Image 1: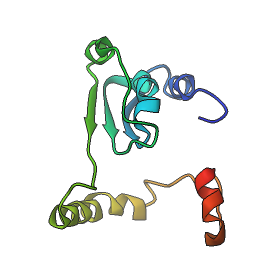
Image 2: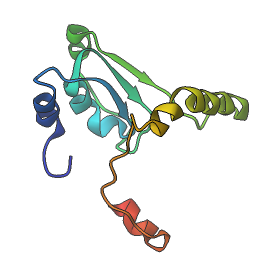
Image 3: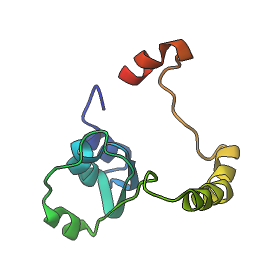
Length: 121
């Protein structure tokens, strides 16, 4: 996303279809491009607003391709509800991580003493 617009790359990597699911922590700054990157019946799940909370979109984009946009945050949840979410992740997500079906892509590692620089990057 820093060296090229990710929408054409997503389309290229998916033979023009787009992806089925996007987990977005940027919010407003990426909303239009995220919607443009989705396949028919695609789902956008917003979990953060690092790129802002306010934007404008053409709702026809959602209707024409039957897209779903949903948002959820943890901050306003009770400790009990957060515990349920953690248990569900341990049950349903963690096994895929352990089995190497889900792997993070790490661009660069930083020592803790350079945490500020890591955040800037």
